[in-house]
Image (cartoon, rainbow, N blue to C red; front, side, top):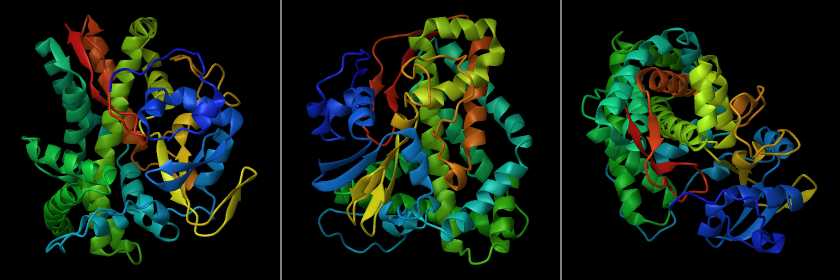
Length: 415
């Protein structure tokens, strides 16, 4: 998929209101689609998404409320296999592992599973940027030395991969295995009807569960990284966290900590390269780098949608949502809500700090948000410091995904 059109012309509302949210028509011009829904149907029931019902919530107020609405359950958002029958796996089952992820669990399980990772990252907040700096410096220098390179496959992929592996204690001199793991998880999550993708997902989680189980046992004996020892110590002290749940959420930490940050880094450079006057401003005023990353989180949210579901008829924003409906909380739309953000379709690195929802809301705020921010900020600082020139080469390629705002390719020339 090539670069989406950025024009301001709006299609007729009835066309958008009848569109499949996962169609190429919508994904190519998602922000026009979101705008029409916010104006005409902020709580919108779409009937044709993969043959099932999906309710899209698009305004900031309603999305923020939905994050903490007890009538919308996370368990209903768990991706489930929907393809032809498969033989039972002899090892770890992909579906069982992701069902233990905190992002798919409601209270009281969600805070119980979130606490060890969140509290450990908070305790290590001062040390983590020091750990990140040499990783980022090395990878930015490789971009400069390469001259022409794909910034997605290089910097945006490699930095968060090395960071999460270093934090957990997985050797990462060769990122080949890590790439296979992340690709396998992503493919299975996005292809619930593919037996082949879910068979590969079984194989991936079987490997990761074995590796992480061994690292957890070592951490209990006092070995391993400060992050892993901290998580294991806190998990031992939190009532009811089983090893199965702990390991599953370490798999989530690797995947989400990489996928979201990869998208954030790539989207940051894409926004700056598409708005060279903003890049020049950062060169003159590097103190704006931090606010530029916040603006990217708002303007091109790495995760566009998170999911909930209804187990009974539910009313939100004046609309009745039937029982057993999957509900999409569209953060990518909420972050361009005209009632909250002035001139929301303009990218502005000087925008005052605003309440974007890119990392979630309240108790459902991403525990790794601080690490992701630090990685993106350091990447921009290092690129501005080391490269005299950075230019786009050719058209970027976007992944066709409703859930993520993710580049597959971003060719640049650096020197």
